[in-house]
Image 1 (cartoon, helix red, strand yellow):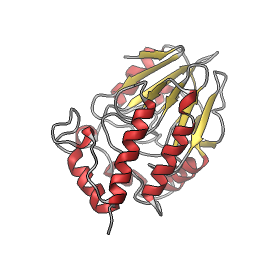
Image 2 (cartoon, one colour):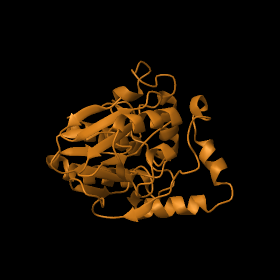
Image 3 (cartoon, one colour):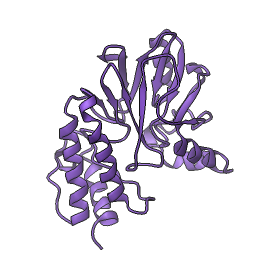
Image 4 (cartoon, rainbow, N blue to C red):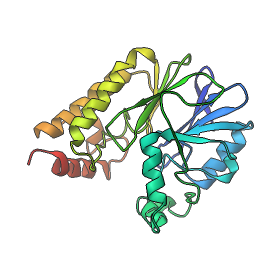
Amino acid sequence: MLSQIADGVWFHQSPLLQNNTVVVQGRSGVLLIDPGITVSEIECLAHDLDQPIVAAFSTHPDWDHALWHPSLGDAPRYGTEAAAAFLHDLRSQDDWQAQFAEGLPEEIADEVPVELFGLLDGVSTTVPWDGPTVRIVEHPAHATGHAALVIDGARVLVAGDMLSDILMPFPDPGAADPLADYLAGLEALEAIAADVDVVVPGHGSVGTDIRARIALDRAYVRALRDGTLPDDPRIQPGAAYGADWVPGVYEWHRQQFGPK
């Protein structure tokens, strides 16, 4: 089911990981951002749209953000140049589907479409389509080629896997300096905060509290860097989401990224 969040902008949320797919109205059809995550959800999304998908964009190359299914048609699919190159390299490897499967939650492993995953063309600056200007804000932080999108006019920020109200920051462990990169990514988002009213994270609730979310994420990353305990409701044992596994991820973050 689609829920409207601004003029000409809707979102759909998958229940398991609270993934958000964003739909933007154009002149001849819609732009689809991060469609997912199971076949049945994607088919339902295609049915609910009831109009052509004329372009798509993946905010980053994680398995749950670069999916596709034949029911969505054959619109051009975009990502940043770095994300597209990363996925092209992945798909060129003989065991790429096995690598893809390693990241899937057991509950939905057989329900996620694999074959069309990651087939992106790299773009920069704006998404090429016939709708409102959608600015690409590429930045380091969570993953190779990660981007946020600013939907001008609607004043909506699609934040990819950042600024979640249910999940703490996930720095990129493959980066040379994961925590510095994440802080730089937050600075990039803070620089455009005045341009938006609504933020859509990759996982969690749509909100209007972008600056508070930036501050909470920054405090978490700085606490990891400094070896202090973050005052973060998302990682508490009684958290509303992920109470059985999110605190364990925090412990891994502390060991992986904390002072040695």
